[in-house]
Each structure stands twice: as C-alpha cells, then as structure tokens.
Length: 326
Image (tube, rainbow, N blue to C red):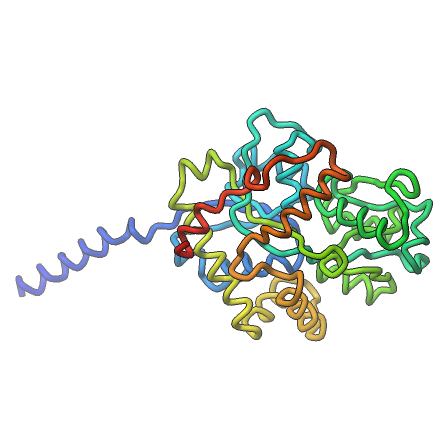
C-alpha cells in the first residue's frame, strides 16, 4: 500500500514538474485579410503553433499604416505584410516615420497573389484614363505593382493619367470599388473572385503580369528577434510545416479555407487552392523569393522615392536557415 502511494505521489510530482515544459508562450500576429493567410490558419487550426510551444493570436489590420504602428508599439510580435512595406518604412518612405524602425522579413508568404479588379464600366486598361485607383498606401505595397502593370499594358501613368486614393487594406478597397469612390484596385483572393461573380472585371493577375516578385512576407522586429530567438525559430518552424501541409494535403487545406472564409463556395475554394499552390502563389517552404525581391526594389526605385540599398538590408534569413538546416 505504502509503495503504491509513493508511486502515485511520484507520478504526481512528475506531472507537476513536466507542466512548465508544455506551457505555451503567447505571441500576437497582425496580417491583412484573404486566403494568403492559409498557412498561418493551418498552423493555428492544425496545432502547428501549439506543437512549437506558441499560443498565437492572429488579427487583421485595417491598413499598412496601422499595422506598422502596432508592431512598432509592441502590440504584435509577428506580421504578414507586403515585402515592399518593409522596404518603404526602412527607407523612411512609409506613411509614418519611425526613428527606431527595425522590422525585417524572415520568411516569404507569396509571390504576388493579387488581381487588378475594376468596376463593370471599365473594359480595358486604357479605360482607366481619368479614373481613380483605390490603394492602401500610394507609394508602397502592391500599389507599385499596379502602376507598372498599367503602364506596361496601356502607357497610362500615375498622377498624369489617373489619380489614387488611400483607403487601406483589401476590405476597404473592395468597399471603394462597390461604392464607386474607386474605379480600380489591387485585390487579393478570394475577394477578387467574389467581385467577379458580382459583375466586376479582373483585368490582370499580378503574379502573371509582373514576373518574379516577392509579395507578402512574414516579419518581426529585429529587437524582438534578438531577445526572443527561440520564439522566432518556433514561429518559423510552425509556418514551414503548415506551408508544407497546404501543398501536400489539398483536402485539409481546403477545409481550413472554407472554415476561415465566410461564404466560400466549393467551386471558389477549389479555384483559390489552385491559385495558392500555382505560379505566383504561396512560397514553397515559406522561403523568400530573392529574385522577386529584386523586382520589388526596382519598382520601389520607380514609384516609391529614393533608390533602396542592398537587398539583404530588408531581411534576415538566419532563423529560417537554422530551422531548415542550411
């Protein structure tokens, strides 16, 4: 009896001692909306973050300005944002200025998965002459991609042939198209497909038109990463595993998309998955598209202001390389 009691007490002590090892570190992530969040959604819904000891909360930002304000204020530890936003703010060309701005990209999300969507009365790129384009920030993000595609397709130039209004993230741009304050916008999936179903027109696919491009990236403040390397490595490991899941388990990925995106039909879920895993879609293994980064920097030089410096100024692959064994 005494021996049994001792064993029970010992077992209880063992459980108590093991508890801290399984404790979850709480971190917060801020992203834009849309299906390109599928990897982080999978990491949340399928337990990849929890497996790495992270309890992650993911919120949607109203725009890049607010997103950068929040991550710099320490409200969020991780972000998913256009790689171009990181370049713009690093160079002091963002909507806000930060003396201690130190956000850096650590992984890739996708390679330009956005469409140019226009109101029903717009039929061609040339029809954009004299019209208004709804953007997040007029000098960063996917706005620069829009300007280049329109120039290549029609010769029309920003401010000379059409104007822009800064409205915020995808949801705000969708609203602008619907209420007529904007005639065209860069829209991510599945919102672009849903707008098409409502009579709007998709003029072009950014990933197809612009070539190699680094769209959104996972980012963190350098100061946070320096103080919390284990958490950053855990985040990277979870996202890489979740991205692999998306490519390897179509049914599982579509299930997550349908649970996360309101009113997503079976047909649209199938189309979205094909786009996410096709050319210009998710970065395999969440790697950064270094060739695509060069395109981002070229567009930044043309439309964002001062020419950026060396590419590796805007990213840190040390955590990613350690996780995947490079």
